[in-house]
Amino acid sequence: MKKIKGDIKNIKNTIYGSFTYKNNPFKQNRIVKCSKIPLFTFGAKGFIVTKEIKYIPKNVPVLISDEKINFEENDIISLTPAGDCVCVWETNSPHNGLYVTDLCNSKCIMCPQIENGTSRYDECLKILDNIDLKNCESIGITGGEPTLEPDKLAALLHKISKLSKNQKVHILTNGRNFSNEDNAIKFSNLKNIDISWGIPLYSNISEEHDYIVGIKGAFKETMQGLYNLAKHRQKIEIRIVIMRQNYKILKDIAQYIYRNLPFITHVALMALEYHGRAEENYDIISIDPVEYKEELYSAIKNFVRYNIPADVYNLPLCLADNRIHEFCKDSISTWKKTYTEKCKNCTKKDICSGVFETSFVQSGNITPYI
Image 1 (cartoon, rainbow, N blue to C red):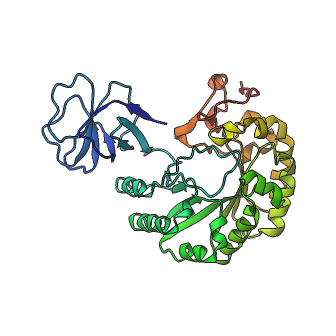
Image 2 (image 1 turned 60 degrees about the horizontal axis):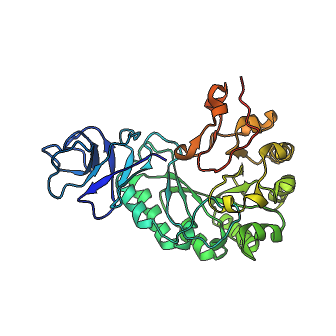
Image 3 (image 1 turned 120 degrees about the horizontal axis):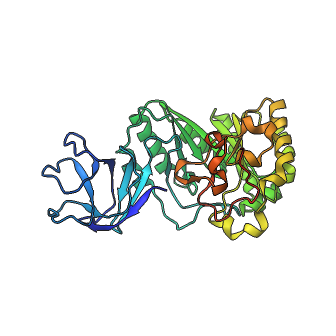
């Protein structure tokens, strides 16, 4: 994640703005990196200066830091009263998303998120005020569980539709709240926006899915939610996170999807991110991707045979069977994507997903292509 920390002056609430090195007075909502506070501050949300600064005007929001800055021009950043400066939207990244809530109604044993029970919809609305969506291919929305506050999610999507007509938006959800058909109807009625839903299915056996999700009855709710979304002509992606509990049944899950969910538009098979609850449960869920090479190949082969579009996410090419390399996508968000020291001279680095910088451990089987 791109961020710096420093001392603040005149910042009582979090400020969001567009990072720039140019103090263009005609550009609204800018946060300017400069050596000294300029005479004209009209339209600026704040300034980032070094500790050599000698004078700070009254009421001008300022972050004072000597840390190296790796923000790019027009990145959207935040300045907090605690002195944190974080990039919340990378202008040149294809993986931008809005993290709308920490709240969730599931307790998935491999969830990489760290819960603190906070809704962030108001923050996301402020972030949107600073983003130019004209050249944005797709927006991701994630949590937590975004559908726990359906009215707030609908309001956010409505605002996106006003800013960018027919904008593609991919929303990650466990799908359980769509077992109430009224929620499916609510989002199917939204106009001028292209929504797709990413919903996890961890097993074709209800008890196994419920164990992974940590909620009894979750499988039944998710399946009903999938059918309700399909009834109202929503686009649906199925997400399968591969772990110790389900790697042997990937082929069975593929067959179950083919027979019971013919309306889905895409399947994503995903390697683990060892962070949050996944780190806590590492001993029971962990599996090196080389252990499920054959099972993953068989699952992909079946999806091809069933004519269901499928891809592999979060998996370095060297850990995948070379027969499925064409299905391995560069999927890790740029703000948490990295490469190991072993990857330094790899000839396939530019087309590889890399690894999660957030994971506390990496595979010992990473081997560069030389």
